[in-house]
Image 1 (tube, rainbow, N blue to C red):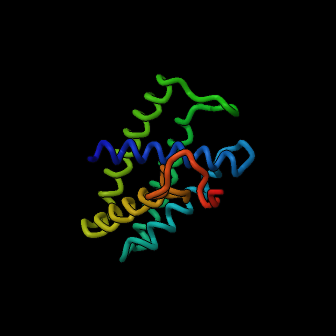
Image 2 (cartoon, rainbow, N blue to C red; image 1 turned 90 degrees about the vertical axis):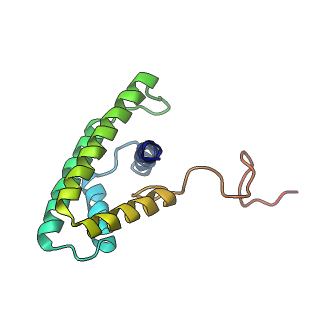
Length: 152
């Protein structure tokens, strides 16, 4: 289950990056905005964070986003990374995420970390930390057919 969650998180991050590129006309999402969203989401969903914890989390999030963006391959419009590049990217992302979670666990109390895990789970169910819809068609909707249009 943890492996599935990690792979799902990687896919969400890849999808998020693709959406961010579309939103900024082919450019990458602004790392500062990504960090701000992470900081705000954690501050809102983890109770009792001290100012010192918030500072450490901000620094950790900044390092995480920097590493995340550094490890993404440069893609041009319409090109997909090779399977080998995708596997290397997944491996690096998994390593970065494990290191992130280990560091975060040392910053937060056990109850705060449990709140963080709950928050992360809800984010993945919603489609990612930075917005977007969950993967796949809505329940009950046949795949491959347009959504929200009447059948005539």
